[in-house]
Length: 162
Image (cartoon, rainbow, N blue to C red):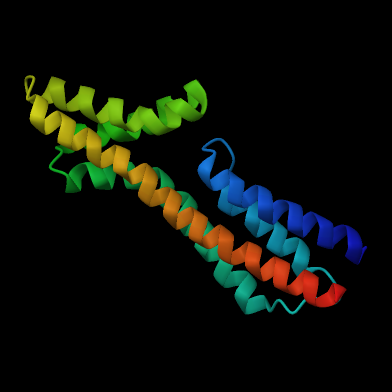
């Protein structure tokens, strides 16, 4: 059983890291599932406290991924309409796959700002840029957590093998 769990842990960790840059896959959640598989191995040196810490981080990062476009839109001078447009773009982007998830918040923020602010293109583009930048910030955060989990998995699994 340890062998199967170890293999699953490594696979989930690697796919989780890939999922951080491929918007359709829930990267951090997959890496956490890998860490959870590792926890159930008899040789694992994973403590319950680290399991809880990574579980909370996974939850926070997953929620943050949806809220970040709205927040960054506001930080770049967007109005409430731009924030709502960015959030609508996140949700609407799911219908168009990976490209929609990346570009959706930008389009949502720009369109909402143009409608709200009577065609102020500068404000609309700044607002849209903030929401677009949030994709890269969010990806960096997700990748950091996923890599941390995956390194923990690899260290524990390979320590057992050698």
